[in-house]
Image (cartoon, rainbow, N blue to C red):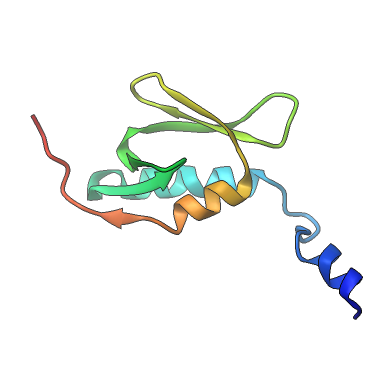
Length: 97
């Protein structure tokens, strides 16, 4: 394989896998760990998984948006951004007021 082939292959998704797999994984992890005090870092902000209401595809693109329970929407997320956020899952007790 020469250098040009390596550059092209590094960013490709395997056939049959699309961006929906990242959205599904984030939703699954959010449901599974909502009561554990788990949080992720997304767009340089720490979010508790229990605050995530849903993850959906933005119309007209392969990007995703995360809808929080307080009504905030974080949009324009790529699959890579979701994977990076999932890699930051940490657990801590949430301070209740």
